[in-house]
Amino acid sequence: MFGQKIKGFDRTDAVLTGVETRTSSPLRIDRDEQLQSPNLRGLYPGGEGAGYAGGILSAAVDGIKLGEALAKQLMQNPSHPS
Image (tube, rainbow, N blue to C red; front, side, top):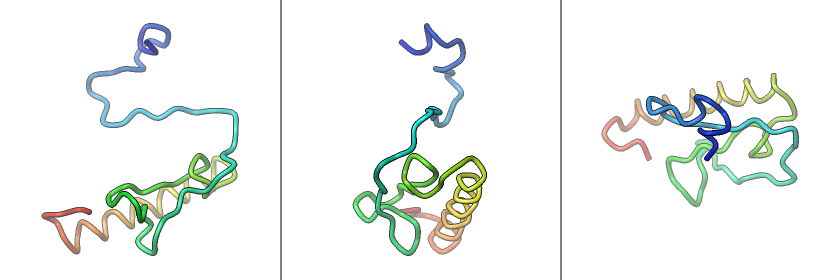
């Protein structure tokens, strides 16, 4: 439905589609010392929507941290990322 309203939203070559909102999250999604969700391994909650940032710059920094955490996990166990 969004693809009909917003051209390109539902691109077939997209790996992940995220939305931008004008609201902040009133909650924080838990993550452990590896920055993964303790309830769903392989999920790295981050940024403003997950309650770990308060703006675009801090969300970008949190994204870098999550990317590093994922890379570290993949380096330690390349056959099983979670």
